[in-house]
Image 1 (cartoon, one colour):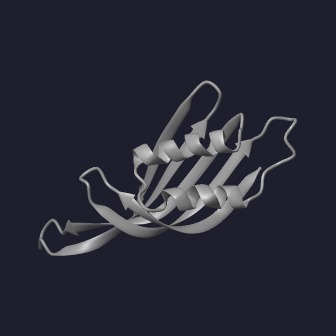
Image 2 (tube, rainbow, N blue to C red; image 1 turned 45 degrees about the horizontal axis):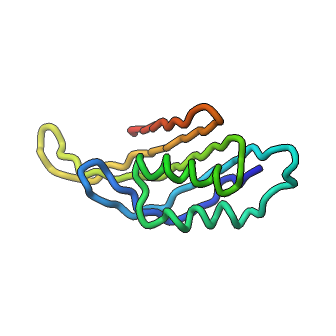
Length: 123
């Protein structure tokens, strides 16, 4: 059970302490126990709203844990994809311009383990 390709505004925090506002696409899924009939989709949006002010690699993992605990799920999966811009200088001219990267954070939580991966696509 889950939601697919929902767009939501987020503030992404980088490892230097900087922040960048962006729009992320989320896929969020949980595996509920057999005795559960399901959960309302608004519960997923509630989790996004709680974390929209700042998402980092650390808080992304917290969001995954919160989702599975709040929904009393046996396991959970979150994918968050967003554009991220970095100012880069050209090697020869040294002229700076913005480069965009497609970033995806992927998190999985099972009854035994929680892990996250980061995928960055450079064009």
